Image (cartoon, rainbow, N blue to C red; front, side, top):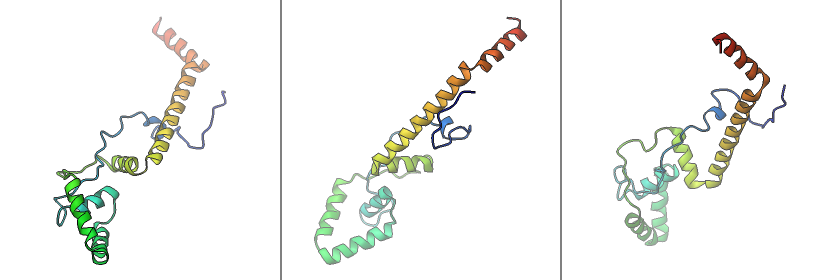
Length: 155
């Protein structure tokens, strides 16, 4: 039997990574810094930051209030600028189709190196899967089975 190159990951089960690595990925990146005017209190800036970074909005609001108390008037000016510069977002339904989509796009936007690493692993998994298929097609067993099928069909 042929000796296979073995990665430290196990990509060989049908439900695993390699068998879904080529599936269509998530659509266009919806993970943008936008004001959330539907769920915001004033202009939706804090809620927009919360949605973008995945932080608890209460902590952002408390931090902004404390910053305003200690550094008045700069946080108010910054909030006004953010309210003008940040576009309002559309929040008429779930932004992502799945938690996997959300995780991918959050990571892509905030940590592109991690996303690159994940994509590298996906391509490595695809390469492993292609290697397995090539081995199956070029093995003696495949040829022998094909000859038996041809004999059974009378070809």
